[in-house]
Length: 257
Image (cartoon, rainbow, N blue to C red):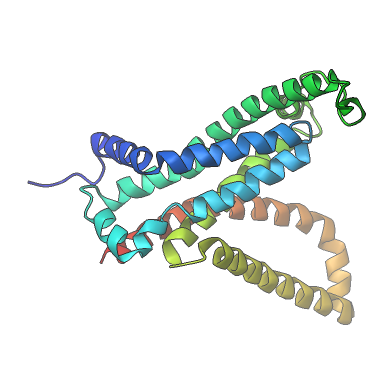
């Protein structure tokens, strides 16, 4: 009997297996995120940084069990295809993660604002010098609404999402590729790659400065090439996401073999 490469029922069972085995870890993780958002609830840059950094660690540890001899054998013996397993990983580290971050932000914002206003009312402990009444604000949702309707800044939200998916797909691949210290090794690899790109750009700039002919030509086409380069760079980063997912699939398949 031929087994289909993707089955929704098997994929659903994989989700069930994930939450059954990691429910305690998930509760602790998102509980910590709620506490973090209680303190940074009104600081949009800090919130964005936490979402990106915590998301990288979340993705880097997703497939950590495949590198353990005992857990790895059990994982690969699970009756599901590698595409189904990777699909669970992609959904959990991207869509599920974003959804849970929004929930954690909402709970943390409500609890943090309530606690701050409550402590501001307590004069006996002199908390009024540290805490003051603050209205309930939703800086994330306000910022999203502003960026969407603003003509000059509406690309910020799309840029954030693009960066988020690129980082998540990169660290998800790292969780499959590296046997230990997945987050650190993936981060180091990304830094070395960007260092290589910077060196190439420095060499190109040096050639333009040294050679007068190249410099004159560079000045003439600088403006037109700048837009084309930016567009190509945007397309490059967008294509990185499916590329890393594809590499993750083949790497996961090789890991099983």
